Image (cartoon, rainbow, N blue to C red; front, side, top):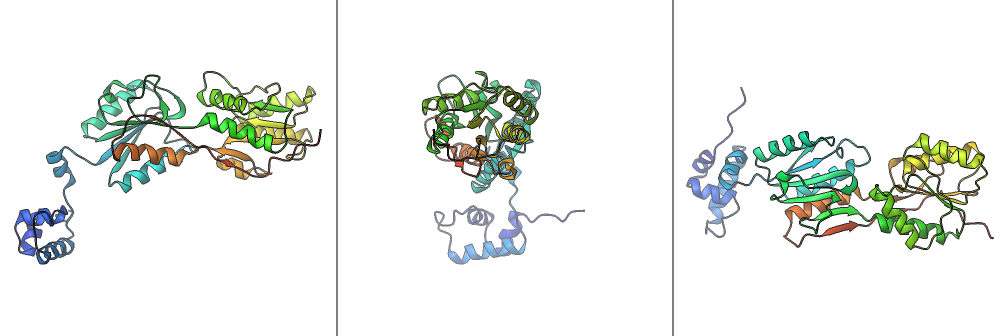
Length: 335
């Protein structure tokens, strides 16, 4: 049978003070209640000797504050590339003295409604509503009147809540400028499916265009190594002679690397390659891949900071995506 936890009354009795005095000391209110330093020290010593821990459940029933935050996502928590967003959220929650609950819906609206209802039954103070892929969402009905921040997603309406997303447009600008700075002016091909329906692809492509890079014919493929390998291999067999490839993610870059190597094309001497995401894969490839980093950790941290920090006007916050320069970009040959 577990040992009985010490009560506030026992702490007060050992310290020789009233229960209310012990409560004020342990709540940090000794100064405004004019409690002597001697009494404060006796209370603190008694609490330590008895290994006293406050009953948080009882406190939450009194105050209606549980110091808990719930992160509700589709598949964010189980994705290895986005786990840093969870770490950032956890770190910020701990810094504010809060616990973070995490729940996944796998995109099922019935599971989502049940999950949010369960969190509300547990009197969670606030919510982070998160998405694996940056996209527009419709906030669930149960969250519309609750303290909530959007993580890696946003709504089409005027912001009613803070939303934190990667600055994908500026990332496209960075990709283009990185190649332009290396002297590449032609023979630049986008590899991937730049569908208008995919927020990241649409924003990255717009950024590339606004930086002044002239793209040659795209190499269409799914955002996966096998598809990229087949598409790039086919393009090379058909006579394509790219000088640079902008891959829409690191998985595509992996497939492109394999296709170029199989065709006897060297990176970066003959073909420069730049990508997005800066996953672990980028540093494992040889030569190491220059990639533009998704700020997952910062997204998680900033979302919790906005939720638990000082109140401010709701806005969409686009977080920078820094380029990680490695060995996959070479100087363009003199033309």
